[in-house]
Image (cartoon, rainbow, N blue to C red; front, side, top):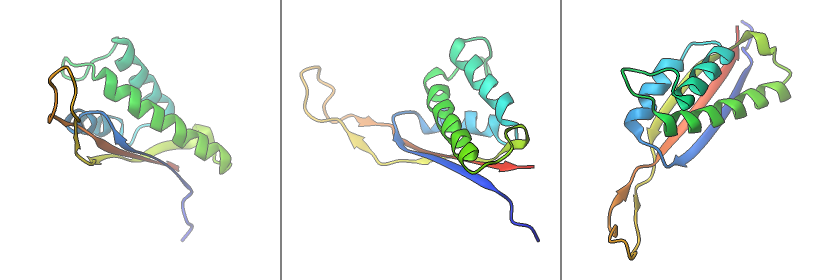
Length: 122
């Protein structure tokens, strides 16, 4: 049984919502890399929506991770035309409690998410 080539990229403690990142990750999973990049770029530009929402901030972060994974695949000499997104997942990151500030936002909990994208050749 031949071992499949994979390329991995991770982003830990991204300041984005876990809920919206799970929705976007579910949408791009299993797609070709070029198609997923185009879809994420359209979400950022406001040309395409998922259930009436654009998830702009989330799409920017996931697009960054996807570009990093694609670069890792190039280093491993993988064929760019045959790359698919095998795994796109978002997990809960650490909780960030805002420190004291003048604006009165002290003690609020900030959302953080861990992102991981694994590409494979098919």
